[in-house]
Image 1 (cartoon, rainbow, N blue to C red):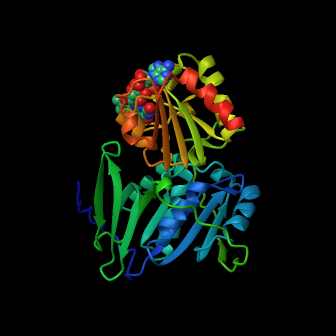
Image 2: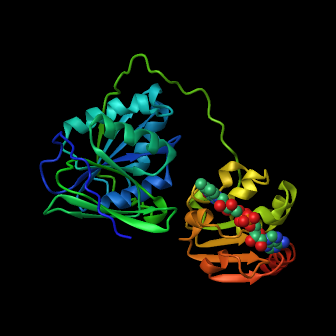
Length: 345
Ligand code: FAD
């Protein structure tokens, strides 16, 4: 399916030149850069122009994040702003800062990873500036002569790809990036000549929301969203005990993250944070092993771009075999222990 949508014409004039200048919202945790932001940098570079990064956070973290970010290949400038009210960043506190930054320079694009945080901030800024926002893009092509950008993005749970064109009449284009579709930008120790500039925090009186607490699921395993190997289990695992007892030895021997289908999550076998699919995480590891997962389209939407898909299912007609590179029609409770033994050897 090819669909071209004419985006709403923004009334403000932010971009005067055709060459791109992207503002990249860089996320970090305690100063460690988020891998999704590194993929967003690659997407921003694909526009073919300058890329200015912006980092916000608590004063004690921002310095470390800036040190990490200034080594990134592809960044031309780095803005940073510190305030207790940016830790964690809230849409209500960060939006006025971004609005101010955008009003000072004729940026053409605002870019971020398609993360929970950016999804709450970027559309708010876009709405405040009466600009269009395009989410979850998988490719970017900028035509500098026409000052138009063409994006692709999955729709209908990834069953169709929409082509969306933001013409020159949309002077400031906001977009979030499906991080699995872009390689992470690399750090280059020899660089570091990025222009770094501090921006004063914008004080927002009477913020209507406040951050109360963050409750993180702790795991020694690789993070699901960025793991190169994932072992995923479905409803067939029967209980939380058998889910863990079956998947963990295989994940251990492969150094893999553990994922789950929604049926496994809804049945209480696995934590919500492990769900892969349309309403869970979108992953594209080197290796994805689906155990007792039927392959519903909503699950495939989250993993079908994996480089190598291995499926174990006792039903030879299970739809998962249509996307699998390697399929094993077998009872997983027999096949998995055998796989673990062989891998250990
Ligand atoms: P089932 O479909 O019940 O499949 C179990 C499979 O295990 C079967 O194929 C069976 O043959 C096999 N099996 C049984 N016993 C064994 C055994 N001993 N050895 C080997 N194989 C065995 N789902 C997601 O996963 N992620 C999402 O993000 C998601 N979002 C959704 C959003 C919406 C709006 C909707 C409507 C649905 C969504 N779903 C999602 C649910 C999705 O439609 C399926 O219901 C779900 O993926 C099924 O999970 P499953 O494959 O584990 O279970």
